[in-house]
Image (cartoon, rainbow, N blue to C red; front, side):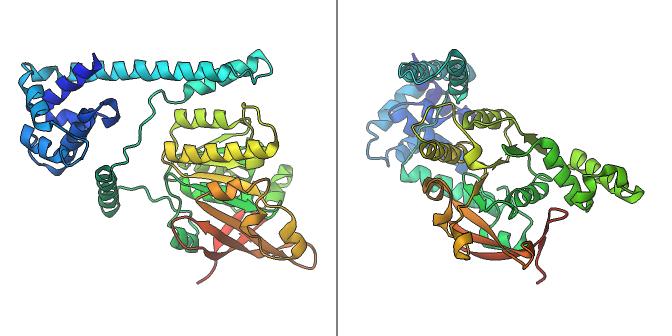
Length: 414
């Protein structure tokens, strides 16, 4: 039945209903009909006529496409009521959804048969998370024509300012990296107490003004994160917030101003009780943010069973990478560094990433925070942001000032 629906849809497109091609997905079609849809969509985008001959000529450029002219002529001639196209599209989408859901159910049955679960609750959680994954998984179109089309569309959108530019607010870092990019995973790594959570929150305070963000913090409570934001935005010494009964009138006004700004201006949701990568994926799918932050990697777990913590972290790292591509958003993950660079009194390197080399491999970008201690064992205000990896750009070093009392990151004077 779906084959006949495919033929009818293409026939209607050729009979004056070409505008409906924008509602179609190439992956819903099979055999040559996939090529015909791609050709029609390309011609429609270029504003060229969509006729049997023009579609045939374009589709026939693919070596595997045979008999295009005769097939397209047959499809067009068999259509008597082109206005039925919306019905045909609806029925095809229903058919595809049933087919892919059936395939996913069979795959789920195979996973359950492995019997890797400890109790019934774990099985229920696994089934829920597994079936929450989008039923319709896109098949990659690897043809050069499709890649060129996508590339040219991306360039056109960038030139027209239609591509989201997610800047960090750290000028030199944005100049080096161009900000955060969809489909990329960025690792922010440091030793404890250097300031990686404070740095992530500083990025969020800038980004969430324009773009919806989610922060999954597995180490601190939402209230602690809120306290840090109030301190930074209100320009209040964080020690004063721990003893609110000693706050003066001006400080109370600053707190109210900061809270009002956070509540009214920031597109941000905070989570402090989500610990599995599967749940993070589910929430991300439901909320549809532009950026997500996870603090931090080695505290995250999975409902799947793994033989070691190392294997689990490798799996989680790969899942975060998949999420960045699936949702086409930046995924920012905080990570610990091992103690080696502290012992050797040197700047951290990629091999200092804790637990596993998979983090380094999966990451598109790695930013390491490094600071020097004074004679009193306190970090100096100047902090280095070491861009140790940038898959699509240069590496380098950016210096910032970190006011630890107020959790504020400031650009260095130029």
